[in-house]
Length: 302
Image 1 (cartoon, rainbow, N blue to C red):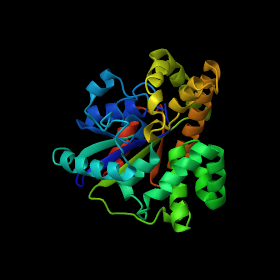
Image 2: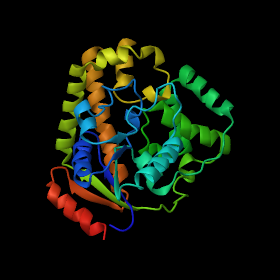
Image 3: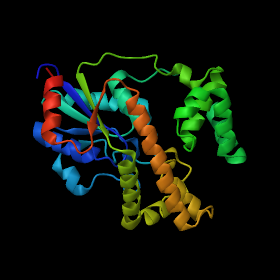
């Protein structure tokens, strides 16, 4: 290989990104950067399906549980850290793997992160008060009115994402979506992006099986230990929000588990939509033989 290559393994949750990334890492004798923003935090092991100890030993991983939920960590921070790590790894590897399902974080590494104006903290403070006093549906409706384009693709059940978009809108009078896609930075490496795909029924079955496994592994106890921190941005994610609602009396346990499955299916659908809109993504069947994938990578790297 001539130019250094960043091989991206992307796709919806539960489709097998980790297993494929490890097999590819072993073939190329290289290392894996995780771009799964839900797996950054060490307190959130079960609910984010962090790779097992066996998987982590099978290939060197970076950015797995390297932060605390108490540490602010933005997509811009990840872009900086990932590029710094790639600079180091490319000194000894011709190819490095970036694997994960967080499209925003993958895009930041590949293309650069969109530049947003600095916002006075008072806007965020007021939005947090509005969330507490008026509730998330009020915030969702405001976002739909202010920025319908972004409201259609963002996770409206994630207060952190809703507040961030409204923060930009209230401070600038311009929609959050208007700041997206402005920046595309040239990178000193070639990118090959593999997008794992499967029939919807396969993805949904895998998602539901994963949720059942999380429950058996102790998600209830893990979430119970985090309930005093439920206001933190890191915990505004599927699996934990529903457990907190159970503890707060909104759902019984059976309903909470059903809500996790439903919201996980929605999350997987949004992930698929995110990656399909990128014309550089090469669709790969989730059960494609490794030799076929290696042949494709070889052709694309010439």
